[in-house]
Image (cartoon, rainbow, N blue to C red; front, side, top):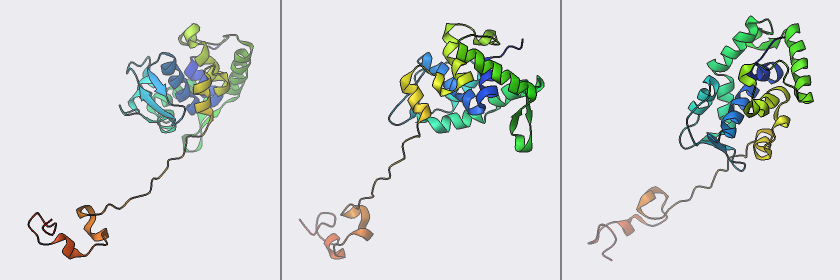
Amino acid sequence: MDEFTPYEIALLCGGSARVAQCALLALHEQRRVRVSRGTHRVTVVEREPGDAIQAALLEEIPDSGFQLRFVLAAVSESAEVSDVADGLIGRGLLRRRFRGRLWRTRRGRAARRRLRADAEAGTSGGLGELGKGSASNAIAKLAALGTGGIADTKLREVLESDAPEMVELPRFRFPGHRNLDASNLPDDKYSGGSYGGYGGY
């Protein structure tokens, strides 16, 4: 029986975006990142990745934090995720087609069905050594079943909902010397006088 890492399961069952989600969940479980439910902003608590894909995700987050959707999109297109795909291509489970898009082969589709069935049944058939252990069960479930398999309600809602729209605040004009062109006062109000152009007041 073929064995797979959680990242390989994610790529077979959900594509490259799900690989990035699995890395996020792993870091979130270890409290190395925080995700805001309100703003969908992810911030780093501790920069200690457990693998190359987690390292790629942390690299995308500046110290000030960043919008989660942009972080996940960047990781899904990273060289690290491409390496996972290359491994599955070498095993005959995926192939690259037009413009590098990944497609499952017949063997890949069969493996996907089996992995999803195992996850739904709560078994770990086909899960390789990197995916075994209680700390990785939630990640393996996300990999096979998608966000519905995430037990953490807050993180699941963030991943399943759209990011809040950015609000553009109105621009205010300030009176005085900060913007002379925009001022409605006559020019002579700011000329002459003994105290730097304030009319001698």
